[in-house]
Image (cartoon, rainbow, N blue to C red):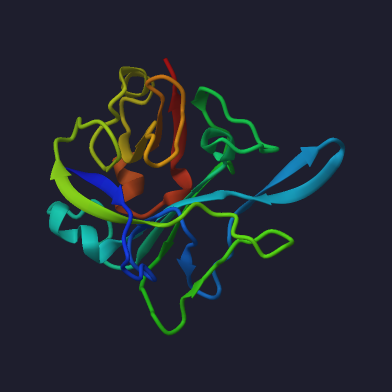
Amino acid sequence: MAISIRAKKSERILFCASKWWGDPDMPENMEYPTIMVDDEGESYEYPLTFVCQINCEEIAPFDPEGQLPHEGMLYFFAAMDEWLGYESPTTNGAGEWAKGHFVVKYAKAVNFETFRSCIMVDDEDNSLTEPELEMIFEGCDDSGSGLKLLGIPDTEEVRNTYPEMISLLQIDSDEELGVNLGENGRLNLIMKPSDLKFGNWKKTKAYLHVK
């Protein structure tokens, strides 16, 4: 069974809850992921876009096979500023993305006392992140389209290129989320079932399909 995701505005306090965009709530010893870029001869570390965090207790009812952890927090980051309409020193086109342009992190336990929000601001203390959205989960078919966890990629090209892999997170172009991956664009984070079973998050691949 796959898990569909619906993101919506909410007045709830989403600290340590599942959320799309906003600022990640991370353990004090977890570093925010960056990528080294070379921009006009200057090299520096550029922060990846925080995509979402998943409080694994919230998805447990929809994952009876236990493919994902049922406690702790999953985090997704990607170099996708350009797909949100911003200028970016990183460029990712169709096909498989290079390592480091996406990162999956996991904290084994959620601790409200020691977790802190990693807030990204510019030189004038203005927020650099999109407004956070509450995430609503529901079971769906493995081959479902749209935002989802697990199942199989809803793109024949990805399924044929990586027949042994399953979808970890699928992101479609979505006007409400402000994600524009091109016409019928879809970003799939995919893994081998064996790597998913043992939490080998570094083995995740990212593949962008555009029509």
